[in-house]
Length: 115
Length: 112
Image 1 (cartoon, each protein chain N blue to C red):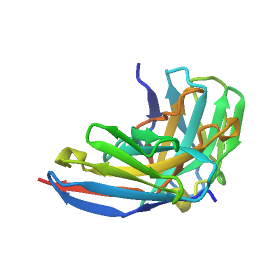
Image 2 (image 1 turned 90 degrees about the vertical axis):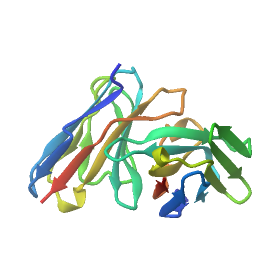
Image 3 (image 1 turned 30 degrees about the vertical axis):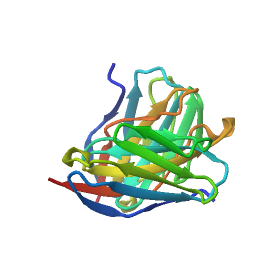
Image 4 (image 1 turned 120 degrees about the vertical axis):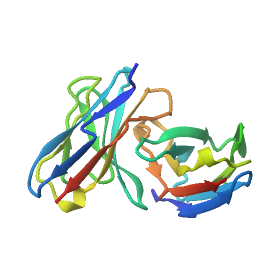
């Protein structure tokens, strides 16, 4: 019930291309879906997040697409740059006071953008 | 404003030794978390706290203990280190009403 499954495990994209990372969840009580970006030797940092009341959220080159009925969401990175090379994690957390913001993370995707 | 700081950055432990991983945040956040990150496994929640004096178990609490005597500090204790505890440990914090978690730089622990 608490799992978040992420794919692919690794992704290689050419500069200027589109990077797409997918996640699927099981727990219908989840109501907040963030994506975190992690550079080597650093802690994860929030990149973009979405709630299930919208199907898409865009911030610059980064877009989250959300499909509530399929329980899936994805991260699209347009015009991918070498500086985007990092590990990306999707995550989810539930509604209500008892969730306390506890995040369930996907397994992570290592993105490499070649110049 | 340093955010979330963690010490040490790296540590090697022998099996059976104990140690405390330190975590401090200067953002006056009530919520704090400890995660461990293993290759290909994402981050898993070990313990969390919703305020001073209040802690609870996460997904993988066995072999760890925590305390929260102040808002700023949330140390993680390993009593009898085991090779399975080799990992990178991240501390995070967030405001009560905001969803964003802020992560520290991590502590890399090797148990031999």
